[in-house]
Image 1: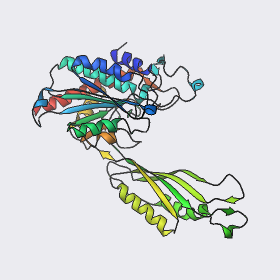
Image 2 (image 1 turned 45 degrees about the vertical axis):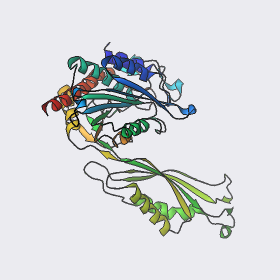
Image 3 (image 1 turned 90 degrees about the vertical axis):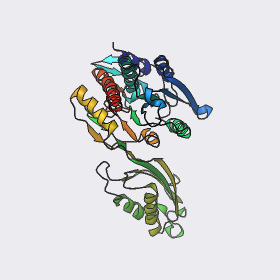
Image 4 (image 1 turned 120 degrees about the horizontal axis):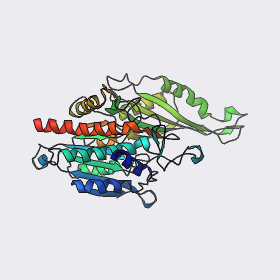
Length: 391
């Protein structure tokens, strides 16, 4: 059994449903401390939802020279989503199990394999380069699958407040599609949600002239919102999308016109749009239809983009050397903690194992993919170190 596989199994065996960490971060810290990492645990959130975060850093030789050093951060989350019905799992989700060349368990692909792989990659890199110019850090949280308000964002705020410099970040999210290395995420769309409340007048369904039906009033406006071209995207981003997720009205009685209609919707938006601009357009439509309404807005994350450069080139080269694959750059999919890290780090990408089974019953990772994943992380460090030495 390889060290990366063994560590993956250790992490999977820890029950760490959000916001629990299950001592996963302690396992990682105990491996990093002997390598010279200064490890700090940061607890955040109320007692009823206590979040565990780990910031660990090992300074490179150039750290003391102003402007000369570079720091690469491996970021990830030790928390996992709930298992779902246990009787539908072929094996216990927190007992690592092997079948047909696959390792099963909650968090196998999202994202305990990545954490194990980049931990062992760093161990191997430092064994070959005991005194690198490159500084290396880890940022782990147990609040990525949850509200994401007491995890990575808290650590980033603290790092920013003390002027900590971050140059490159690799988030270990499962980005691969069919083969490890066939896709990396070099950005993500922004996410903004709205809760639209349309007010009418409740009344008896037999006397519509004495009521004001908010469902009927809302339909033309909602139809218009569903057909708007918000932007056309760009070379890196799909066009902005507006989607309704829930509509609720009514008292439960079949003979009552409701007094209010509530619509939940979400924007996944490109860098061609801004939260302020999208909100303005929505309100223009609602006002034009004369609706008595209000919208509660929540900006879940701003879009970020890392154009091809030092970090993208280092990972592309590592993937090519390890697998022969010419990787695809993509900004599709949901959000990640990269949206917080990008506020203090100019180059952020997501790269990890195949994502086909994430959040599913019988989540798994292909065992044969673990060593190449670890090697790609190590080769990326080697490429960044070589570039720093040349400079």
